[in-house]
Image (cartoon, rainbow, N blue to C red):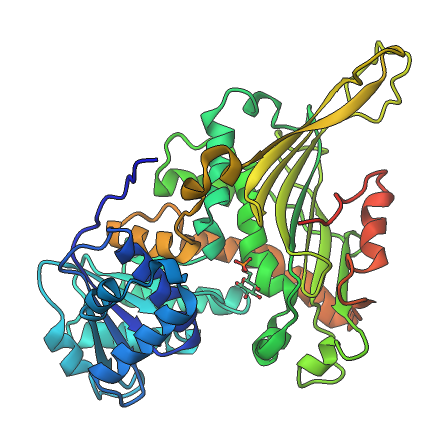
Length: 482
Ligand code: BG6
């Protein structure tokens, strides 16, 4: 397959929190991969900015180590890596003080795209934004990139939006939800709006229900302090799962452009009905030697590491078709997928038909990115008209070749979109606020009732009660298998 990589415009990218974990694991290795792929122009420059007193050589070594650790050996060509390292600079800045800002202002170049990645806690967003202005570092075309968590609730999200808006226009603010950068998430839009086959059936008349699963095998690990304040609802549902729900449920935008897409997503969030407590199951993994409570400080923590819920989108398209969402840590398999379960045919003409058949379209985000569609056919051979369901399976790596499946990861793609000035895959301020407005009452209800999460075995499919959530509607979760 011919590479279609088009280099972006020359840029200066400043990474605040440049020596942090996200920079080391995702941002810097991702930038190197874009460089390796030929997408980074000659004049591109990456500037680490952090509190640590470090010289440029020290930071270059940090970047070299990060790339060597997180990029596959095949791509770690030493000449290329040296060239990439040549683009790296470092400035020590004090986000809350004045040290380093003049120096940063002095090294930014005119005539190139300026992007500022806030890879720091949200408590520093305001300080950094204010100083970028005070020291005349950001021009009108500059972009800032902010990470989740974008607020802890509606109130804090609004305050953050207001703080950023004091110094930057909405068109300059890129709120990252890395799920939007995943290849298959974009494929969801291609499948829905690039084919005639699915869209006419994509509604309550033909769809029985939809399941969205993001299951992880990892536990809370070393992130206990952050996670215990968030829980699955804030960490995954308010953002990543909400985005998947929006892209699945939204009306076709008139164009694939930032506001057209984001307007449609916003309409979905605003159409979400409040969720009844009986339609939610919260869980916590509890096991000998592998216990949520050992991973966090508060031995009596009531924070959920798992949540499953039934959601109604109150509009014409989805009236009566529920969306079931589930996400959890320490589950049986790492699987992210969207399953669209169609209704059974209204009348069967076959005597042997057991009445169980219904088409199911599964969009697999990870692993084995691809799609599969179950279709009912006649079981081959004699013996009458016996029906069976067979999968039409398309794993992208098999269908398009390994080379085509070697696509940029979410962060790489999103950072390049920032440089290109394309906000389509970033969340708008009103979208984030609407998502919190829906999430807040659910969490407030748990807090009020001191709701105790159900325990589930680490390595399992989650709490029993979550199975019941579908059973009582005569449905069942798709088996959790990678
Ligand atoms: C992050 C969450 O945003 O997404 C993590 O904070 C979670 O808790 C991660 O593990 C999942 O991302 P991915 O890309 O591995 O599915």
